Image (cartoon, chains in turn purple, brown):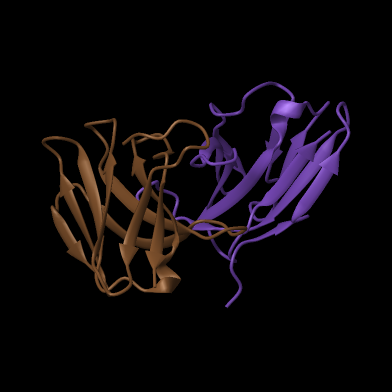
Length: 115
Length: 110
C-alpha cells in the first residue's frame, strides 16, 4: 500500500531563496507531523496538524518557517529566505488518529541544501 | 555513551548475537514510547512501541523494556542479522509532541 511520500527528495537552494516542501500522508490519516533532522542527529519536532488545524507549531525555528494543510490531507512546509543553517533533512510523518498516542509513519524525507 | 553532534554511539555485534540498544528519556510524564530504525537515505521505520502501563513488550525478534523508575528504555534484537545495520532512535510522547533520542548506530559484523 502507499506510504507517506515527500517531494522533492532533494532540493538545493541559494541562500535567500524560498522553498516549498510537500508531504502526502497516508490516505485517511488524521495527524501530520513535520520534523527537521540535522546530520547525525535525531529528528526534531517542528509542527503538528490534526486534519487542517495546526495544533502545535512550537518547534518552528523562526518566522521564516510556515506550514499549512488546507484540506486536511497534503501539507506544505515553506521556508522563506533560506539560510545555511536550514540545511537538513525535513521529514513528514502521519498518524491514523488525532491523538499523540499512536504510531507515526514517516516519509523518506526531503534533503535541503542551502548554498 | 551520549552522542554529541556527528558522533553517534556505535554498537558493533557479531552476526547471530543478540543486540541491546539503550535509551534514556527525559520526561517522567511521558506515557508512550517508540523505537525506530533508520537506514541511510530513508525515513525512520517503526519497529515496536510500548505504553507506560507496561514494562515489557515483544515483537518478532525484538523486545522493548521500559524502566520508569530510572527513565530508561532498551531495545533487544535477537539473532542480529546484517539487515539490522542502521541507526536506531527511541522516541517519547511527552503529551505535546514526540521527542527523539540522539540515536545509536548498530553495525553487524560478518
